[in-house]
Image (cartoon, rainbow, N blue to C red; front, side, top):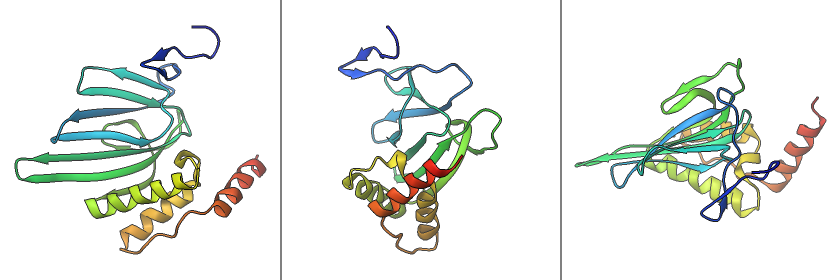
Amino acid sequence: MTGNVAPRIGGNPAPARRPAGVVTRVELTWIEKRIEHWIRFGHITDEQILNHKHRIVSFAPGNIFAFARWAANDYGTIISRIDIVRAVAPGTPYQTLPFVRPGGDILLKVSGWPKVERVLQAVDAIEALDIDPVDVAPNYWRHVHNRLTVVQEPRSYTRTQHHAWRLRQRAEP
């Protein structure tokens, strides 16, 4: 490997490696129709495959990602949840979250399939605008969380809102 070019694995570029301790790690499990943990969006910086059912993915500080969890037993679904989290820098305060080490800045946290489905629809709507959900204003995810918590419909994210967020980012020191 030379420079910043990542090796290709299965036709896709491998995530760039970061030094240990500077990333947020998320433990993913996939046991079909029993335990399904996955990343809906986010820029993975590293991936460690433990076996065919378990892997650990890492995110650089400041990166926003969606972590979905679903589990069932013989009687049906026992958990359905999605968290939108901002990876934290070392020494930064954070909230703990199962399967996320050390934790993160939780922007959205919902459980129950109707609310999870509504968040997934919001993500799809953002992607339909050709906007990467990673780049969405963190306050929008908080808005979605708050509205769903009180059983209200969240407002749609707009290109104008996104443009204003990007300008604000450039203006802040």
